[in-house]
Image (cartoon, rainbow over all chains, first blue to last red; front, side, top):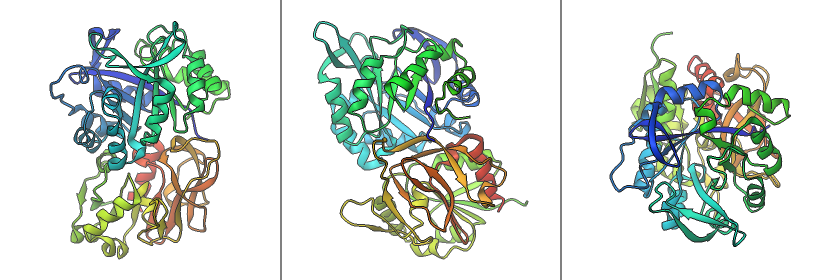
Length: 257
Length: 201
């Protein structure tokens, strides 16, 4: 039976894993390779490395750490952040990443998704979506450049429409980051994820809001997502992955041994 | 065992590095090549692949490797798309079927999974047939990592099966040709064990 995936997300800056509050005050928490290895050994099903410097400034970012991870890691991993061209994506895949994830550049140029699909195949094209629930309008809206608060903007896309668009263009997986929940640790946005699930025929990964083990159970059971991504609860050791996986198994959720 | 000559066929696809690193983690040296002579002299040959069957077959044809691969007599392991290239044809092309290498009888078809999502992406359990050489010492129902939307049906050449909306071949075997639909290079301990079994053949 296909297992639900537990996916730690590591923020990377200059080849180091960092943490910060709302993308500010970044503090180095360690070297990327041993941390990645540690998560793999603890039973993470997949890893996402999000290069937080990439989208928000124009310089060429050194991605040689991708090779160093690929050499030691024996689970799949995805690289996100600042991939704007086929050449950049190709380089990262050649270095050994299994998937690449695009977000703001895909909004600026939706054709990028089509080109990535046609060049590398659907299986390695992940589209990340930052979705914000606007209480006044009652609508879910896609935001762009969320990595830099001076550039963050609301796009014209409603989330459900963008989800349809990226699938038509060849996305193989969608990571839906529910911004209202992000960093609050009060649980995933079940209402939004359930609604999006209905129009999503590719794997859907929940992001934003994990604070305790029961949140993972809820999002798998109630929103039927394929994977759940989280950062701080893993980095701060609030939920050790082996404990989380053992708990989910007792709740009859399909989880890899 | 003496040092083996292990060659990964450079199919021009993107997952070559991860296969290479996985073999190196097992303590082996490995060569990536599209040179006929080097491939022919190998003790073990890997045929990796991701992307589409058309593009991969076009690349193999352009490199004039079709008859070279068909003529190999040493153990060959196709991985993911590499496995799919080993059968007779693939319907992945929308216009017409792509002829494949024809090393193992079978066809690649789009998976029919009802309401389930495609691609079939993630860790799924695998059921090997009795005495399957590549699964020696690996627990039945071990998890392996899959990413694909097309698959080969169960046949007499199925070495292991998997279930996702339908039963399909997770691994194939005929003579010296082996193929796995999943990614052993990304399947943690079970995947490393399978790669070691292949190298030790």
